[in-house]
Image (cartoon, rainbow, N blue to C red; front, side, top):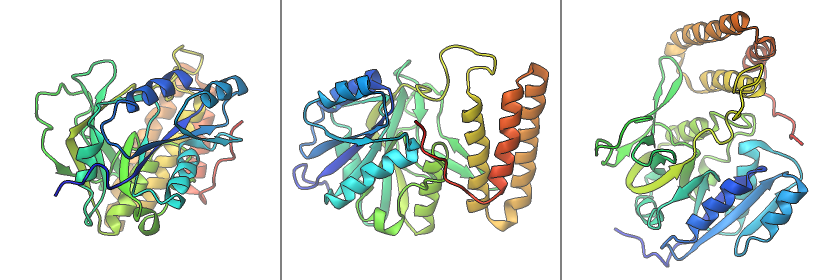
Length: 310
């Protein structure tokens, strides 16, 4: 049963952190959508004042200004809270480094029935619009590894069917308002990375289905914030990003891997992290080496929320 496009409201939450050029392209593409009751909630995560001045000039968006960088989780949670308290029927988390097809919302909304908690579109690479960036996610519980379906594949129609997923990427995650009551917000402990898999697995544990909807299409400029454009002494990925990656994966394993698979998941983590450490020693990347050790300590310790970043 299709939803009347004018009957349900949706808040599209974008988080910006000194990324105006990406954000404005995303907003420009959202201006073309055919869904009549879509509102853009733009959350700025403590950007520089010059950036804020430009954001304030964007018409017809709801701008929320955070004083600090609360991370992907904190920024999105501010947007989710606003959308929830404002009574929107649906909430979409959308990366600011994406552009969308005009009709991408309707196929998503039409599948959000009572047993469906959340949905995601077919996501292409911005660099190659025939290459899949994500056709959903699977969780290999025996090693505690979230994997992306179709990543890097040419789209030859092999991902054209609606499928049930284990997890949905936070690049474009759309859910019913009631999911905030049932599942809650993104876990702020993560800050960024693996928070989408965590939220999805929590939704699955509540009995909700998660769906991949291929008739909805968007494009993602991957690695816009994940890596630096210039190779430095520590490589393209920052030591902090490496820290978050290792720490958060350990969080996810501890939280969602069944007891029967904990041994195999632990072996996988040990092998993976040892390879990183050996590589950093051989390349003389001592900052990343120290950050990786710190990530092991923090990932196995009591989860702590990262302090807001200036």
